[in-house]
Amino acid sequence: METATETANRRRTGRRVVLGVVIAAAIALLLVAYEVNRSPRTDDASVWANYIEIAPEVSGRLVELPVKDNAYVKKGDLLFVIDPRPYEYALSQALSDQQALEEQIIDLGRRIAAQNSAVQAAGAAVSTSKTNIRTASSNIEGARAAVTRAKAAAAAAEAKLKFDTNDLHRIEPLLQKQYVTAEQVDQANTAVRVSQGNYDAAQAALAQAQAQLDESMLHQEVAGSQAAESQAKLSQSIHAIDRIETLESQRPAKAAKVDSARLDLEWTRVVAPFDAYVTSMNISVGAYAHPGTQMFTLIDTRKWYVIANYRESKLKRIPIGAPADVYLMGHPDRRFKGRVESVGFGVLPEDGKLANGLPNIERTLNWVHLSARFPVRVLIEDPDPNLFRIGETAVTVVR
Image 1 (cartoon, rainbow, N blue to C red):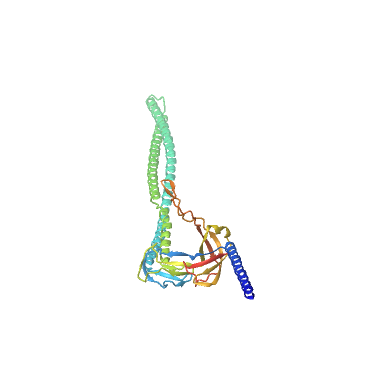
Image 2 (image 1 turned 30 degrees about the vertical axis):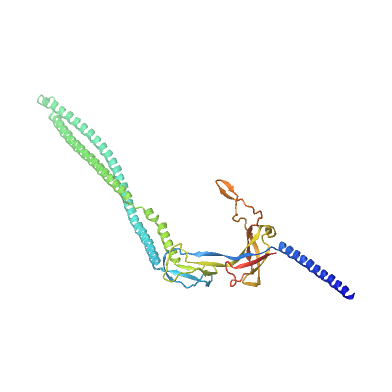
């Protein structure tokens, strides 16, 4: 009887233990589900970092390559050197051309100064010639007035000579008849001789005045010829002046060539733009570099990210700026702090392709829909550059 009672008690105790275990498992499952729903977690994540492909800006043979593949470099460290000699020669040539242009501008400036002096001298000659013309014109007017006066005096003298001659011829016959005295005849002869002298003097003065008029007109013609010649020289001197602006306009082009040559020379030395790891390097000294052709890759170690792919149903629990715990597959004992920086807004759909302008939906009996996954970008706040590698598997938990 006691044995049956003990057996029944054991059975009741076992059922209670099993029930307790089931209840505990259910509670634990609910707690895990709640925790997973409250703090989304995924192991579909990988480490990521920004990287750039290092390519030269100029071509040439590599003469220095101090870095090695997978080496760590700091900002400003020398990566490689392209043979600088062709670019040094180009810079020297550009500087020489620039200096030659400046010397041409200086020489032309001196020549222009001399040409300007010639223009000023020609202008002064033109002014002098014009003054001479005006003086000759004034002299001509004076000479013409003198000729007019001389003509008037000659006419008056001629008239007086004729009058005195006629008077003499009139009274000479009267002397024989003693109607006039000899003295009167002598006075008439004297008057004729005086009138003749005055007439001759008037004619001489007229000839002199005419000669002065002719001379003044000749001076005017000479002055006019000199003025025309001086004006021609002035015009020739003005047209002979070189234009320095033509050379000065070449200065920007020469300066640009110098700057370009100097920049090309600087580009022969390539340095690290930031702290980084060197990777994908398969070249050696002596390789020929081409502009824009990748030499190797630099992984930027200043910022590390984890790209975690979360189901679309979990995205509502992942706000921007939310803290996150990150674990690396290779170092699961290390927890790194992160922060949600962004959530992806698009992935490539599996269906919905267009065919002839209409959606092409594949027919299937599989009515089970898998949740799409969207990338969540988590910025690592305390990364360890010695542990993080691009593509490394990670686990993220958004709190």
